[in-house]
Length: 409
Image (tube, rainbow, N blue to C red):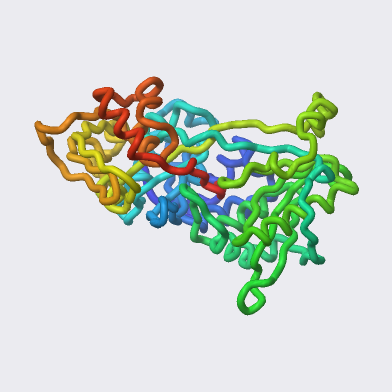
């Protein structure tokens, strides 16, 4: 068994086979995987001389308040039919994270297939995201929209640049490499885009990318939306409303700082009318992404919380350590720290006997730091413990908007 970087000449057919076996690509569409591989780091695990597990990650940044933190996200973790339950995915993922951190990544994230597996590597679950399905004809936006430009997979560069410039809220990520947008566009069934070139030098300023398996009446899905201003957002929503003459339902992830129900006419009546149909409207909540701190001192150095400050000892455990190879370039962030949170934050190795002590896994502390849930709530359901007065002070100090990634990967 060997863990090593992907070699296209040696491994291309083997990793294509893995994705075909798990249903991520169909025969004849292997280019989709090649584009994803080109967008970041790719590691493989050999079994009997053939790559039977592959892990991909992509670099970018995460917005934390007004700061931007070096970020990497796992864009694919897959194991072939013959290599299941050998620990390959867990160990290879841990090594990939370590290599990313050695290259400067401070926060790591992923979209999970289910809750539990990646918790063993220190990831903590993000907040609920809202998937809103509505009849576009019921949108109440009264903004006028101009004739848009059609966008296709061939416009991936313009769309990618537009996504990088989009309005972002706390927790939002960007993925740097063009291949991330190309891969998403190529993977979309019935994919098409609509947008406007109002940017400097006639660059794409705002657009939506949609897909459907039923072109006539839908449902349609908005895979992403990129805009910079209120007016641009409303113009894109007006575009969706314009589809309502024919399309019966559209689903989209709710933007982080917007409540889409504000823009819907009689949403409860519509849900009752459509219940049980393929065009059923409503809101579904699901927490599908996870993140973890990979450099505690660096993350806290760029943490600026308004109001009072709090100091405490942090006894942090990091489960990834037991899954790392002996020669991995990083060993996790477990240890004892003296931590300050407030307008000026930081973490130093050691213990101050005069301070209260918080005990937590990196999973739980990452959720607290990002603002996913308050300390008192995490003490009920996650691995986080401390004196009640310390937990209540943390609730007062760590008051952040709900984090929203705004870029699925």
